[in-house]
Length: 182
Image (tube, rainbow, N blue to C red):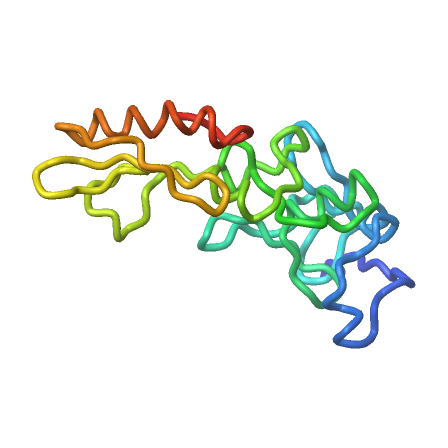
């Protein structure tokens, strides 16, 4: 019978409150290796549950984010990448520049506020029956509008939803710097 190697790591949090705190950079580097180019975390040691040294850490959950279980708590891999690289807990939301929630490459991550993170959306909400960002139907015309800070800016009414969407995308370049424009 093969016995899997286990690691004994001394800095393991003991209380629930300690487990809910994000791990330190030192703790992360003790148990995980992070490749900034690929965004992958790999275990530095074999641990309980059949995890071998070098295995990719965590699992991709239903919403597309990778979660990594560490010291009795689960943490988003993109937040751990930020701590691993900077040594500090992110102040805002960690935004994936390319919108791919599982792409945790360092160049793809940025510490963003909620406004910037919301601007970086690709699809309209499910309640938008036209399926186009910034476009709504008004009678037999199509209105384009964009949110700029706390204000909504009317961009015009158009004959087709595609024309209205083009106006929205053009305005997005001006009003939403730092967001993808496609």
